[in-house]
Length: 198
Image (cartoon, rainbow, N blue to C red; front, side, top):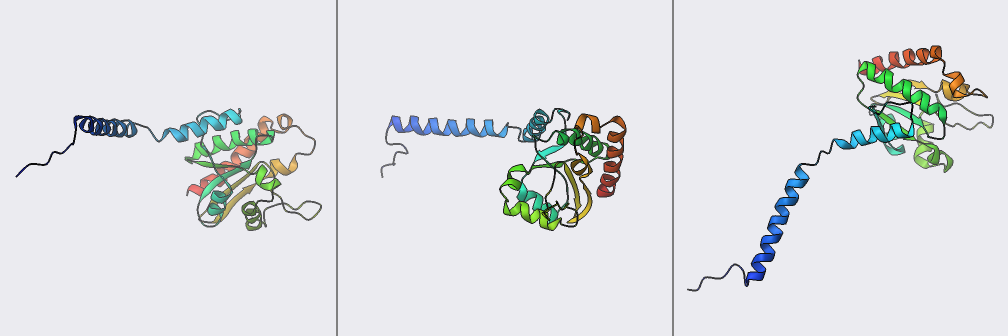
């Protein structure tokens, strides 16, 4: 009885050997990739947008769906703002320090400007879910303003902070955020965040 050859030709042997070696090399390369670098990259990206925030910060980029999921029953600390709003830069810096001081490991950042302008359905659902907190304008419309911080634990809102967003008027953020005002905001956030982690 003749033994069947595994490979029909030397070329086929070389091709299969090459593919086998390539698979092993790819497996080794993929196993050495540090997938935790995405958080580091996000924090650096956030500090490049908001220059008052340290490079080593707690912010992770989020979207309307994730924010809605938190409000609907999960837990999280959420900063809603957008880069064109200078007030968000100041508030993000204070929030990051307060959250770090009590041991929070993540703050969800949601840039909601485009969703608000387009009347995105998920954004509108967030507004409706938070209707007892969201201010009403002169035309009886409810809108979230930047910066807004929402602290949610198991779907229960423990804190909704938008005082800097609605007090602005004609004051510039650099004039509003005095040392005293920053300390007051820091202590207010820290107290709410302690309740969140307890």
